[in-house]
View 1 (tube, helix red, strand yellow):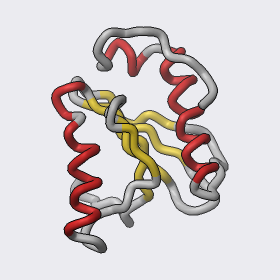
View 2 (cartoon, helix red, strand yellow):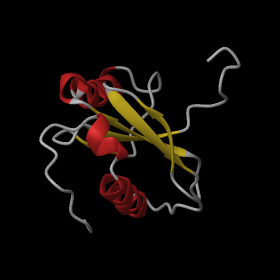
View 3 (tube, rainbow, N blue to C red):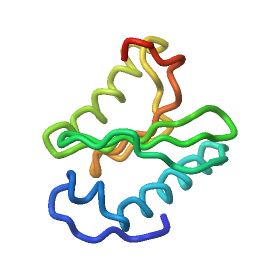
View 4 (cartoon, helix red, strand yellow):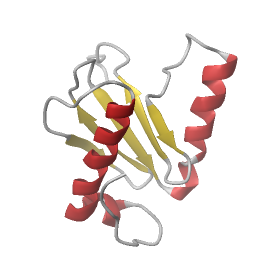
Length: 117
């Protein structure tokens, strides 16, 4: 993978708002998309930054993708997705890519956004 991240200690708000991190994350997304036979077709947006996770989103040649990066207390979610895909296929999104060490998961769009959300 291209790029290098500074050592932030634990990921979180400071890291996720840092321009270096914001430049690195799309590089990881691009690498994962390429491995899946997809390509990013537009800019990466960061619609949410919370203490427990941040989300980045980008359009691709397939569908919009969502990168969720989690703080240490919630990185279990990456493994949970992988488990649910095995035990309940078709009932959860299948990740395009994941990195359990980093707590990153790249997901396709699930469908239309609820007006209530």
